[in-house]
Length: 418
Image (cartoon, rainbow, N blue to C red; front, side):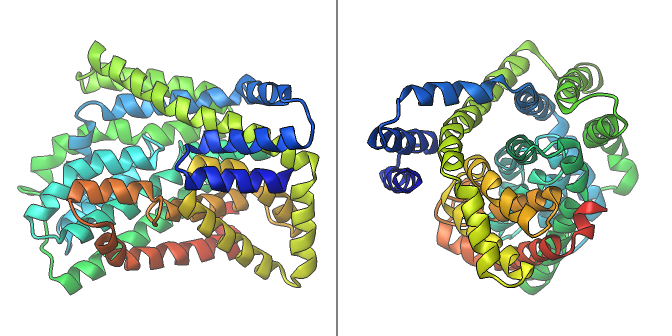
């Protein structure tokens, strides 16, 4: 059945069917051909919706939407400009540092790419940045938000592999900082080569001090999330609800720019994003049941471990597969399909599931700015009004940094298990 699922899934994707529909189509055809009742689909679709930890996804999305719906973005950009604007390629550095800060609020690379791209790419173009380079900075830096808590992909990985979400959140901090620092260095070197200008904050620290102070309540979101989880005050689901309350308090009483309209728009956006993610989760649950029934994860693990003499070769093979899959599948779907498969392989070679989760997120994040599906790549190129091909050519320094960070996370457990 798994072979039929793979073929039908691939054919439907080539016909531009949505990922969830392609998954359900493949599972339905496989069950029908094998003579199993199609009622299994309804049963498996319903099962993942009964997960209490799954509630963390919509609440974290809503908290991020509420925080980003007001003037927080303006204060954040000013604060980032104060810190790195004086360096060569200052506005590019602001985009990267802004993504690191936004990551602790949104947890979504797509939201990050849209919000910061619309705010910064036009400014960068006015300062003489080539459109393809401005788009490349935005497309690559927005993926940092997938590593810094609260990260939606890490929640998904924790759910499908039964890994502690708390441990994943804590483990994502160092890789996120590493990736952000590497992208800052790549941007600075590229800016020197391209002779791009600095963008110092006018008036220095005192002029922007008030905006920096106003950015601090929102920047405290990841500290609040990690601290609450790490000290055992609440579960991830409970923390996600507390994050929504925190966002309402900050927006309503600190920034004072939260209205009923912005709350309603944030709830609508949350419903749309949650619906898209949940539909993929439900559809992948059917496929996972078929794969488990035929012992595909165990067979794949036995084959890879048996055919490769060293664990480093197994890790290299997993990275290669994830990189390829990440370029053709949306990140949630790829995470849900590959997570259970590679969890067994990782256990067979003694890899900690937390390290594997961070390795998967970085791999699939690279796919977000790699053709043919690259979501943040298309968003950034559209905002910059330039071609996809030229942006891909400008991305090579950022690809190099991401691959180096991926290698460090893959082969040195201390970066995630500290």
